[in-house]
Length: 184
Length: 150
Image 1: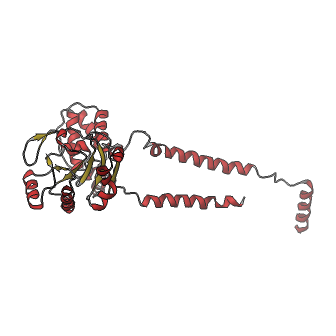
Image 2 (image 1 turned 180 degrees about the horizontal axis):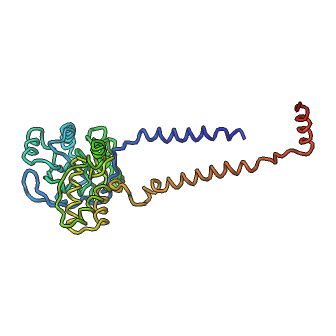
Image 3 (image 1 turned 90 degrees about the vertical axis):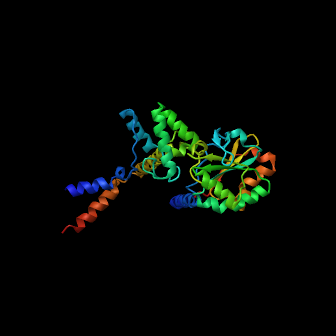
């Protein structure tokens, strides 16, 4: 019956383990509801050409869709890395989220333009359909136009290499669907 | 007394709610708006509903809520719309599914576990051996007590 005396201790250890594990959970990381679904269709002007485009314009794929705005400080932080990725040949489409188009165009002139095209989502409807709750966010579009991954927060080399690179190198892994984030 | 009431009103949560005016075509829509905006959780600020939050995304969701109510959508349709975009997270009372099952059932589970513990505790008491004294023991006690009484 000596073993019985250790029941409270075991219970405590179990609880401590559970709570300790809880420390490493990021409470701001939300499950992305749109994973595994096609990119929601839209009808919005392109930022530079003003031509009205839809989801079918997001070609070629796989590609990144980057949610950005001039009011978003972290977007400025990740911008140089997006330029690097674009130079490596990764197709990036911009979702200019709840922004003033004039300011956004100015930003691209000043900081460089990593985007193949930009959806001018002035009232945030595309963002809403996508489940965006802040900027920056970056989505991975699979070859078939399905959303494979969402990253919330600044996209940098560490994040890209860890969570995203494989979508662009090995086609075998493309079917995996996942989410990560270190949201603002 | 008047001051106390004022103070109490000021600390109540609804006094902190965002002030916005929507013109509803019927009072029924307005009351549904209030219920739903308190039921929907702000994705950005986490521990506020969209009625209380000033975050831009909460404002957007209130506009969507207003528009959909005016467009004649049912509560279920509106909640489905929100869940499709922001997941069950966006509801303070998520539907029971595989992910939320533990959330819903753990209070009951804990109650059952606690009940079992209590039941076990009391059952153990009954298992103690009969503690009444035997005739010989009783005699011994009587004798000892008798000696003591002056």
